[in-house]
Length: 158
Image (cartoon, rainbow, N blue to C red; front, side):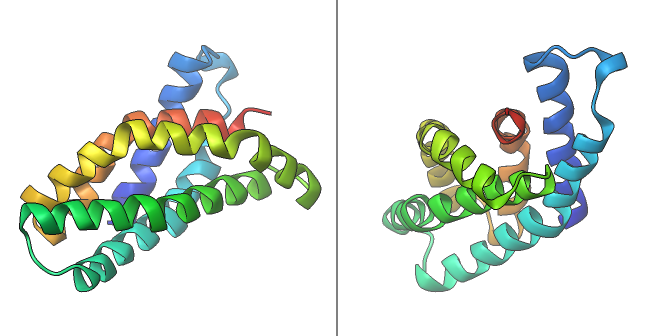
């Protein structure tokens, strides 16, 4: 699943550079896309895949109530930590010093977390209620193409 996740984070970065930032192919930053794909391969895929297994053990069942509880735990406990780690790792791989990374996190984190809360709670309720555990990461990554476009733009905006 990490290969698919890394690839989809890369697609999100291409969309970000071409549609949001309007860089054009001649000015596309291939190294940035490779960095973002690496984060997808080695961080996003393994962490989220493992998180869903843990979450299924923490909140047992497939009822509407269980789906709501899973979404709340996911969005109130996991998402804030994951988002901070993602932005911090991105900053480090972009060559920011620790001080620069802290300034960037202070500037971008709250906005990114609020944006997260607009998108992910309804997606996650549906995901936890209708989708079996072994397909949840795939569902998230399909929705995440749009999210990754935003997140890679936010992570690389200096």
